[in-house]
Length: 355
Image 1: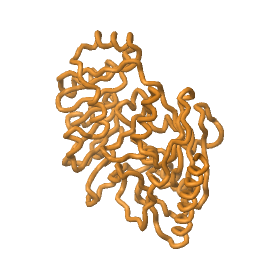
Image 2: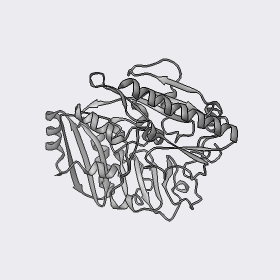
Image 3: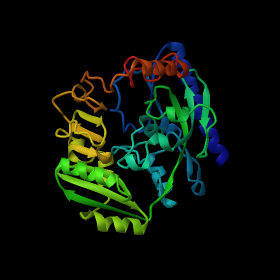
Image 4: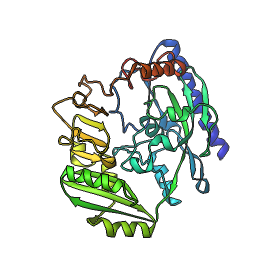
């Protein structure tokens, strides 16, 4: 059975390589798509054809004792979560699915982490290795399946957040963690400025706080860890005990102010900064991530430090989704594109309009 499964996978990659070769020969463009849960993210682009990563699915290897999983790029995120939960483990970066059928490859390509990112790490922090197909028609592998890997360039993490513009992911190896012994969430009715002060205070304490958020006049703190540590934090922090499901709702933008915004801006600043605090509808990551819903201005015009991303907007909105790059950084991006996709067949312009 395993041999048949691998042969099927080989057939899929062979078909994808043929489609890449055809696109190069004809000068056409390809988009890589999984479940489509993050189609809105990035610059709107016109492509000639779509490669559906869900043709290549399944967990290849999972060793709970090693805290590592390897799966094909088209594997549904829910399948991964269920497999980890069965072994009392989880993927700490907790990428969103936005209510759709998110895939592993899409989570890596978008590089968006959940509410615990400030405490538990970003998506790129968990990636150990990837397999990919380049725009040159090469089948390559980078990294490995061990946590301490220093061989060669760190191309694996370079694929995180590239939005499918450098190549087609075929498989990903990533590290996971045991589920904490105890988890609870506390809520406080307060202003956003009071919430910011609370977040800064708790982030500078030894309390095992792994997520913080404020919206709709209420702030939330999540504590996870040992029974003793979380119980002690509960006694010290006060607040009202609420259901942990608030974090999944926040992660997938199922709260009203995020769900219904047409133009949603994500602003990253230092947690103690007061920039755009009054206009912020959702505060996360100890105060470092701020969401603005349908503002009547471009936040970039007011930022003195930090950066802003037009996270979601109608395709008719002409505003650039990502902040422009410094010339040196832009040059690195161009050279990477030249190396992996010299003919610009993979989603040209989706990450940056001139890339």
